[in-house]
Every structure is written in structure tokens, then in C-alpha cells.
Amino acid sequence: MQIDILKVKTQVLCGDEFAMGPGKAALLDAIDQEHSISGAGRRLGMSYRRTWLLVDSMNRCWKQKLVETLAGGGKERGARLTDTGRAVLKAYRDIEAKMLRSVDGKALAEMRDLLRDQPLPASASAKAVISTE
Amino acid sequence: MQIDILKVKTQVLCGDEFAMGPGKAALLDAIDQEHSISGAGRRLGMSYRRTWLLVDSMNRCWKQKLVETLAGGGKERGARLTDTGRAVLKAYRDIEAKMLRSVDGKALAEMRDLLRDQPLPASASAKAVISTE
Image 1: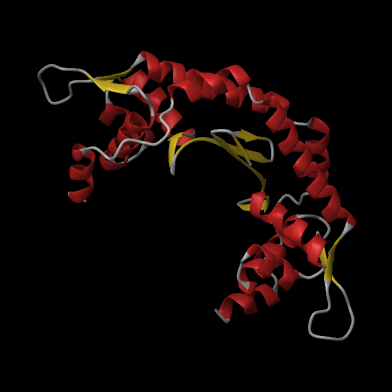
Image 2 (image 1 turned 120 degrees about the vertical axis):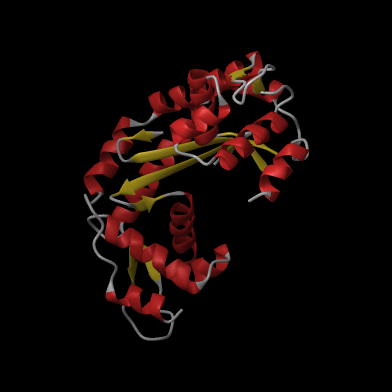
């Protein structure tokens, strides 16, 4: 989520795994639109493997699956969000929306005033530190 | 910043670089306590090189330096935050604090109810996808 000069990343932890985050939420949105896991992956420019692993990770972190594949013939049987999938996605988006509205405008304006448009080039001494590595 | 099951990361963008973020804010805190860049790095368990590059990056992204080294003899001349450094750190912490207070308790409780304590092990089919890579 980007807000002016701020980038804010919210993730939900389940043990050492991330049960939800920006990429997984985008994937749920795409599955909801494409009715297909592979179609959702293509829409997001992700490999089939990565798409599949993200779905598997979500399905293992929550008490109920977030994505279910539909029975039936054909190569692409289709997929959809479960009720739990919709509930988790909505709760995640609600938290993001409230964070967005919480951003302290005064503090943000102060930082924007102090920030360059682009960083200066790396200093000679920093390059020296790098080159000795 | 961790809030119950949520991990929230806020970064300030300057072009393609991050002008501020959790690691850089922690480094500013440590420099303020140690009065030394290398001492701050040791406190945080970072290599001298990494510590130095983070300071250099911050000093290039903002219109004024955030950290200044002090003139004088000896191997460790010492370092301190500039007024701009203190202002940026405070604005960043203010934004984080407001975000923390903004977290939607209802949405968070809903997610906690639906989340497992630990993820299930990776499914056999996910392992198959990995092993064909």
C-alpha cells in the first residue's frame, strides 16, 4: 500500500509463515475475478509454481481453506474463494483502510519537506566501503 | 512493528531508495545512545559495512544529513543525530504510533479466530510442485 512517500506493508503471521499479505490478498482478488488459480497467476504475472505455493500456504495457515478448487471435468476446473477466504480478505482490507486513514498528515508533510526528490549519488567513501568487501 | 498477529512495515521512499524504515530508525536510535556509528552497529549486530551504508543512504536521501560525525582526534571520533535527524525520526515514530492505534480491533479479532496457531505442514501436492522445479 503506497501513501504519498510512504510504503506500508501489512502481513499476518502464523508461526514463521505469512498467512496474509499484499501479494496473497492480490491473489485472492484475482482468483475471485478469474475463477481460476492459474488464470489468477497469469493476470498477476506470477509463475504457476509460485501461484500454487501461495494458495497452499494460505490454505495451511487458516482453520478453513481460503480457496477451493471446483470438482468437474476439463483441464481448468476453476476455483473460488470460500466464505472464510472472503472474511479474511475483508478483514485484511479493513485493517489496511484504517491504517491509510490514520496517517498523520502533519508528520507526513514534515517528512516530505525534508526529503529530496531523488537521492544524491553514493558517496566516494561509501563506494570505498563497498569495494573493499 | 508487531501488533499481535500483524507485522507492519513502514518505509519512506526517495526515488528507488528507502530513506527511512524500521532498520534505519533503529540505527538512528542506537547512534543517539552510543554516540558512535560503529558502536551503534555493534549494538544492533550489524557489520560495519552495512551500518555505514545505511548511514550514507540516509544522508543522501534527505536535504540535510541525519547523522554527523564529530571532528577530533582518536579512532572513534563519535557521531550524533542532527536536528533534521531528530525531526525525521520523530515524524516516522509518530506515523507508526498512529498506525498502531488505528488497528481495527474487530477485524483483528476476526482474523485471530480464523487463524491457526501454526501452519499445517506443506501438502504433498505442494511438495510435488516444488520438486518438479
